[in-house]
Length: 328
Ligand code: A3P
Image (cartoon, rainbow, N blue to C red):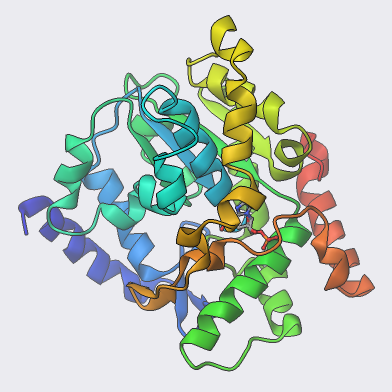
């Protein structure tokens, strides 16, 4: 361990006991850090990013609340950036690896001894992903006046679908750990009160929405529902935002459609690599590639939520988003 790690570890150890605690849906605790509910490991991750991550203006950070379509956007952006390096029909890395394994996860990777240097060693432009709220990144990454301000792509989603997706996902992890399922009611009480992974969900979305209004060339704000409805339009939008627009020749060759098809739910979820349950221990929990593919649809909440739940979530969403022009 070098000095930077030691200093952060000490600060972290002193601060953690002072933070409020909340149910993490998985039999353990979240900590409320600067307004957001995080597992302790990501509190430390955020601190380490401030302490030791060296941002570059060419960095691309895919940001999201969990269950908003992170896997999909990882695939789309990876395919766009690397479109000249691989054949789409065979040997494409997305046919052999889960998108998670192709995009380094910032607050997870910054921890282990050598990985800050791994992040350093990546060639530009680096494509990284993160679930941290906008306000938990250092100014060097977010301030438009910073010479190292990064580009952020944010994927958001209808809160009702996020909640349903999260509930299913957490219960898969609970089953694997031998825990009884968390009831929809109990999960709902936590979610509506903001106690969810990287929650409150609404505040997470708001941070990036405001940032995208202030710095549209640095923060691209997308909605799952929009990408689902018009994937090609959004693939072009992503490529332009990343300063990698498609040439006329590429357009004529049908590259946009190839990327959309490669990254579609139907294609990715049916690949062996994403179908086979191979349990890997990430920190405490067992996650497996198939956990990241469930239905991939808009509006599945209708099959799960009671009218009262719908009213509550719609009301919160209205209160939080209406004044600032955001709708789901
Ligand atoms: P559902 O549970 O509603 O099906 P994340 O990747 O942020 O964890 O989000 C997971 C959600 O995105 C799940 O939603 C999952 O099915 C969906 N998803 C995964 N891959 C997708 C893809 N290629 N296209 C559309 N949705 C996808």
